[in-house]
Amino acid sequence: MLLHCAHARYVWNLAVEQHAHWRRWRRPAPGFAVQCQQLTEARRANEWLGSGNADVQQQALKDFAKAKSARFTSGFGEPTWRKKYRHEGFRVIGTDRVAELAEDGSPKLNAKTGRQVMGRSVVVHQLNRRWAQVKVPGCGWVRFRLTRTALPAAKTFRVTLRNGRWHIAFAVVPAPVAAPGTGEVIGIDRGVKITAALSDGQKLNCPQLTVKERAQVRKHQRRAARAPKASERKTAAYAKVAQLKAREADRRKDWCEKTSTMLARTYRLVRFEKLNIKNMTRSAGGTTEQPGKQVRQKAGLNRAILAQGWGLLRQRTEHKAPGRVEDVPAPYTSLRCSACGWIDKNSRKSQAEFVCSLCGFTCNADTNAATNIAAGQGGIPRPRQSAGAGGTTPPKQRSSVREPQPTSVGIPLI
Ligand SMILES: [Zn+2]
Image 1 (cartoon, protein in one colour):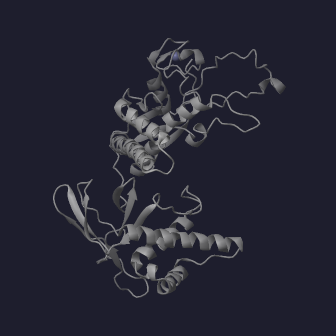
Image 2 (cartoon, rainbow, N blue to C red):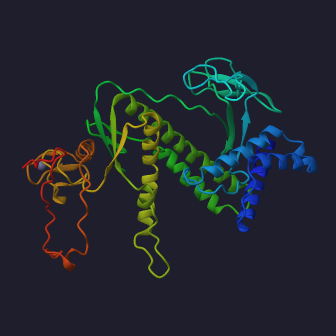
Image 3 (cartoon, rainbow, N blue to C red):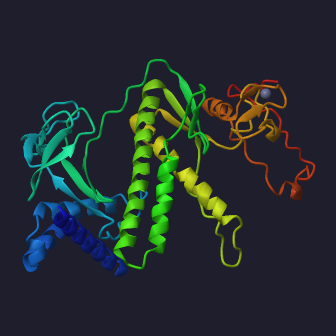
């Protein structure tokens, strides 16, 4: 399987290099079909490449073609180089020929010939409740742990190696989770102390590494730092750190999956505040001319934000409940009183406490913000910094208290 990884990486990198070359000459680069012909030639010329599995190598080209055509929408941009140890993986296409079905469940027919369209399918055998096996070309049957109750019905699967662990992923698009008939709307406030506060008062926390595990991370980091350069001890210590970090990422992913399924099942509409996580976690480093302030503290906050899995939670909820997830503009959702609509920064007494300075409404600050998000409130434009320049109120005189905002019906509450 390591050899499959090496072949797939080699072919992918050739494709990257080829496309970079053609871009330099501002000419259209060869597409998937031409590349497949070139691959056949290359396999004849290169003994090492020719000894590998042709399907695995061709699938690497297919992956590249997909990545290339999705470069504006995928969020990953141009396909880039794959590195040894870091990007180890390959795709296998199913060997079983099955009749393809159209969207309504009837057999799919070729429009020109009228003949049945045949597709590929992966053969998976279940061994017992927890284990199943799949055929990998050149390796025979390979056993894997089942993480779902149903066996996957996929056309292809991908095998990857990360942090010394092999993974298998079947390309299946699950059906969206059906909405409950209740019509309930939920608002979710994402924070660092509480990962997700719901407007119905629930507080959900994303599991992190335990105190003991964090101490282990520090221990291995310290050992790695003290070990001599390029020594076996250094590599081993860094591998330990990577393993622990992978465990944390696994826990976060698991939590996001479970929570997003719960949200999609329980609520008709899920509202998140609109966060630009990329901007929020930007480094405070600044430039050489203008070095930033409190760089270490900001780096710590960035780590804490990224450890919460905010982006993943929203993304997975959208996948499971398409069209039932909304974004609410974030400004003032944490300062607005959810009972009367008054916005005052003095209302927020502390990280956890919210007491309205107008009506005296008391609530947990995160729950209050989540209630605002559920109502779709907040999002009042920020007062402009240069209001004094041509405006009526100089910035000094402007009080922090703002007028109550109209509710969504358009009638002011006071
Ligand atoms: Zn109030």
